[in-house]
Image 1: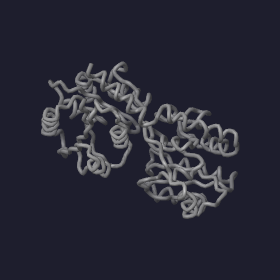
Image 2: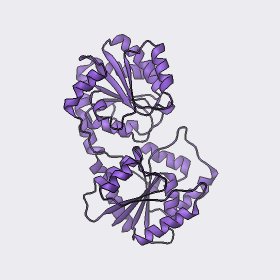
Image 3: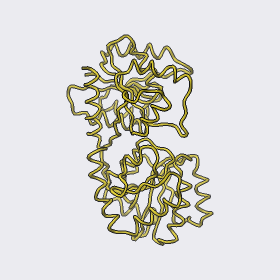
Image 4: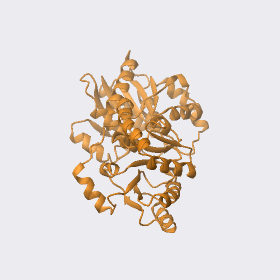
Length: 367
């Protein structure tokens, strides 16, 4: 079975990590995977996979609707005898599905996330039913994402399966954790709340900082570690200074491998206004970290409330503050959530589980 993943590129990101994990978790000798990127450059993960022997191809998409790209993909499918085209995100789906028309190649489309606020268009209302006819299987990375496909993309609910993202569990360098805490000037008794995300309005870090300000008044040893970079960096730093939290909130900037930073956090926070299936949330769970998330998108599907973490109302500063205090002031609650995090991750969000789910879908499309 020859499976071709069609995507924008293989830069470092959530969709790209899913593709990378699918390929690296493939232990089935009957399934061969390759990648076709419609944007350039490939990105670091594309180059890494190429070096590891994975066939990776690229054809830069031209501005507007690129008919030539459809012809190129179609020719590639025929030359390589591709059985299944797995399209990741909407635009790759359009090109991949059209390229397979009137061939024996099957199409699988995965929606990885939605813009916030969500929207639709009359063009999609006309085009998507046709694309669906060309597609053997459609998957969404969360129930919330599935609902968005139904509402905004006019895809029939019975056509969509939910397949959660999966990752390989993180492996921190244990001997590096104490030096890292020292580098960040965290005291030995520091209680570290943390988050890893781009600094963007959709991630709602302003609310997080305001909630932490009140938590800090109650817990003198509380610190907030913010890993990431983005357009809000200067605004967030200004807010921290305004709230007299400069010594308590630590900005690390972007880290290509945040594993050790996640490992030194006591609690992982994700206060987003919108999410699909957050990769960093899965990474935190793979380390056994209790998580506090907003009731946004796929968050409450990943974090079982009062089992592996706490789920708060979306954009509710008071609830977030109360959750941070309750999880840090009750050793019993903290221990219970921490103990349950990793088993839930292994059962539902491990890369092997994701590969198994997609392999089943691949086989069903060829029956």
